[in-house]
Image (tube, rainbow, N blue to C red; front, side, top):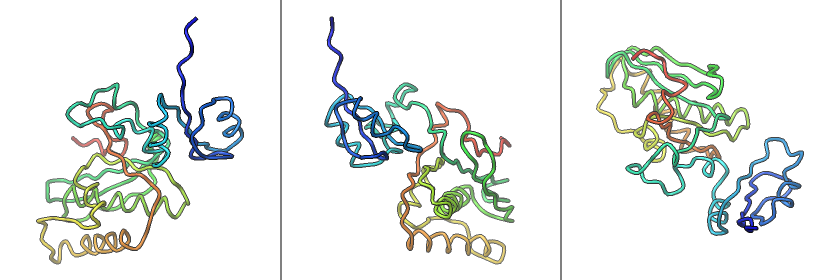
Amino acid sequence: MAKNKQKYYVIWKGAKTGVFDSWTEAEALIKGVEKAQYKSFNTLKEAENAFKGNYWQAVQSSSNGVKSSSKTKASIGKPVMESISVDAACAGNPGILEYQGVETGTKRVLFAMGPFPEGTVNIGEFLAIVHGLAFLQKHNSELPIYSDSKTAIAWIKNKAIKTTLERNAGTEELFQLVDRAVLWLKNNKYPNKILKWETEFWGENPADYGRK
């Protein structure tokens, strides 16, 4: 009889955290723990590396060394439904702008802003992510945030935006929100992971306005 392949179990949230080589032990540590966070791995090295990060990184398959050019449906996996998704809509670019955040699984709207008389999609996506981070902080939630904008995600990482949109009387309100968002990023730390929504494999972002 073939011997079962050894697996390793990482627990980020349980009665005890760490890397374990016994499912019996790991199962006992997560039993009864509300929203326990755990995952199995095929090698000890994978498990140890995963434990250095957090649960949301581990379940996002694309973070496991998969290059964009080699992404497949199998390597990407499925989105984490216990999360929020954000998106922006712009009638023209620049144009009338609005953004919203929803529960990924149910599409229930959690927050919405706009319309603003003039803005760009990237600015809207940026503001939506920061709004989402502040919303989750207020609710003491570590849920991840999905966005389909690589540009906005990069702006969040850099805590600054790069835009050609002119700051004038018509865009002043929007730029004031941008200023506040940048300040918030500089003054706050957050546990939430910002993940890329893989539209090619999963379809439209749950927060999409459906106006294409």
